[in-house]
Length: 155
View 1 (cartoon, rainbow, N blue to C red):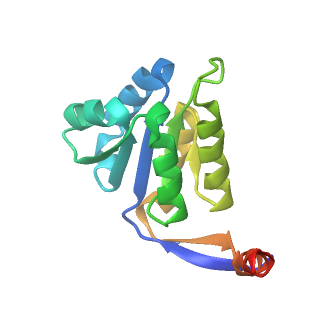
View 2 (cartoon, rainbow, N blue to C red; view 1 turned 30 degrees about the horizontal axis):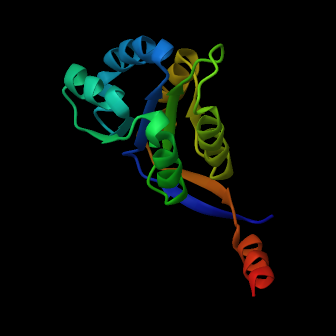
């Protein structure tokens, strides 16, 4: 499948998400990385966004909580090209009622070649990368032939 180049600007659009058992990790991580995060546009689900906005004194676009559709809102923003990077501290040991939404979010991030950090270590490595502060030419599959097949079969 051919690829298209989608440029990411130096100011990234970052989604911040955490399951209940991982919220404290996310809060500590964002406090430590506050100055780096301040250089980017931030989005968060549910009460996580409100808490982060207060703790960091940064503007955060707040979406619904995960179980109420926040994960799906982030997925929609990824598909629309409105999210460049996802930091999602999820709890692999807890089964949650909205697990299908979580899997869908992770899947859509891979479909659109969006970097995803699922724990503190990967988030540390990614945010400290020189690619975070510069432009980046993200390659995504060119889905135009796939879309054409769908249109032809619908007609």
